[in-house]
Length: 167
Image 1 (cartoon, rainbow, N blue to C red):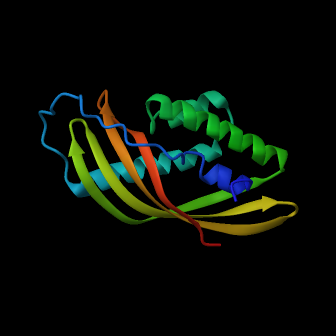
Image 2 (cartoon, rainbow, N blue to C red; image 1 turned 180 degrees about the horizontal axis):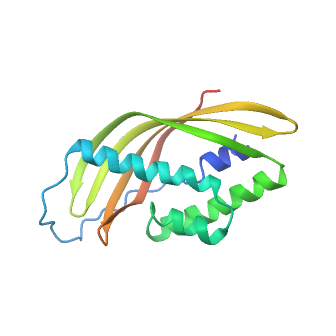
Image 3 (tube, rainbow, N blue to C red; image 1 turned 180 degrees about the vertical axis):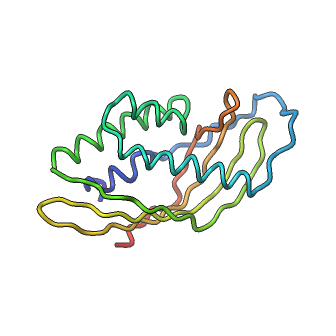
């Protein structure tokens, strides 16, 4: 299943990581945002990740991923993205527009300068290879740690709970 170039491109940022904690961060002085605001921020971060598939220069890919990831997770996702693009190129595969829908969202925990959330989403898109086209539809469920770094929120940890190829 992971040998599919489509899955490599769609799932480039999925790695099974353990939650790192964030227990040593100082206390926040601001009031935590509402769940609706946190949901909107999380959706924007994920949409940015999928838009990376439209980029072709490593510097632009890294800069775009840096808007969504931080730390070693950023480095890991950058190399995963480059590997996925290489596989697509080798297999003469092209991705069409992707449509992303969020199925649910839940804030699980508020940590100092970090939020633990659980969410579900679906991705549908067209893929062209071997002189034909077909649609791929995947469904995901994950827990993310969003951490505020220099006034920006980024994914610093991810745990994929479910990945399902629907079609």
